[in-house]
Image (cartoon, rainbow, N blue to C red; front, side, top):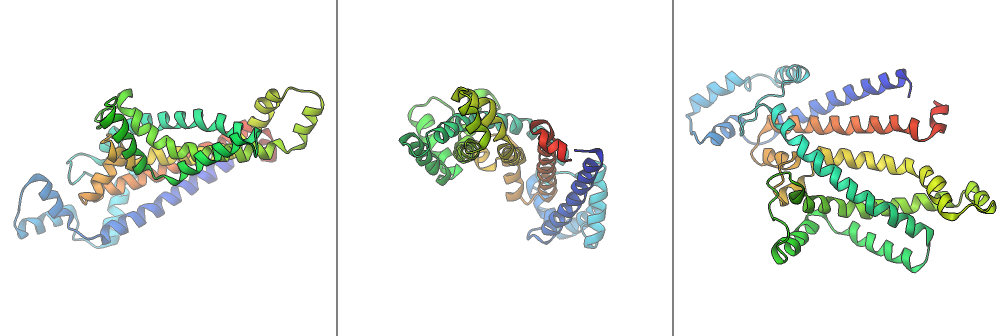
Length: 312
C-alpha cells in the first residue's frame, strides 16, 4: 500500500467516524429517558424539578440539537468524551480500563480458535467426501447453529456447577477465570473458520501448481504446508481481522454471562442505565477499532502475497 493509498484510507476513516458520531448522537438524543434524572438516580438523590432544569441548563441539554452535537464533537476531537452519568468517571478512562481485559480475552479466544480450525479444516479438505470430512462438517454445523449464550450456559452448568472445576463468575482477568469465556467465544468461531479453511484449501488443491508438484514427486505434506496453506491465507486473514475487531469491540454475551470486566459488559451496563455519554464513546471506540483492524489487514496483504504488492 502506497503512502497515497494510506492517506486516502485515513481520510475515509475520519469521514466514517464523523458520520457514525452524528448518527450515534442523534439516536441517543432521540432515545427515551431523561439523562439528568438518570444521573441523579445513580446517586440516590431525588431533586426537585427546578434543580433538574437548572442541571439541564448547566449541561447544555436545553440547547438545540446541532449546537449540542457540535460542542460534543469538538470535545471528542480533543480526547474528551464526557463523563459517565452513572459511574461519575471520564468515559475515556472507563473505556481504557476495560480495553486490556477484552484484549486478553480476545487473544486467548482467537488462539483457541486457530489451534482447532486450521488443523481440522485442512484434515477435512485432504479427506474430502470421506468419513472424517463428514464428521468435521457435522460438528461445525452444530457449532455454527448454537448461539454463544447457550454455549456459555452449558459450560457453566457442566464445568462450574457439576464438576466445580472453574468459577462461575470471572470477576478478574486471571487465566483460570478467562478459560470459560474464551472457550465460549472460540466455539462458534472455530466452527465457522474450520469451514472456511476447508473451502480455501480445497480451492488451492485444485490448482495447476499442486498437480505439477505432485507430478515431480514432492511429498504431500510439503505441498500442503509449504504451498497450499500459505496461498489460502488471504481470505482467512480478512475474516480474522473482522473477528478480532468484533472481539475487541466488546464480547458482550460472554462477558455478561461470566461477569467478565470487559468492554462488552460495560456497554450493556451503560445501555441499561441510559448512560448516553458512555454509549456514545463506546460506539465510536468500536467503530475506530474495526476500521483500524481492517486497515492493518489490508497492509498485511502486501507482505503475505507479493502479487498484490506488484499490482499496486
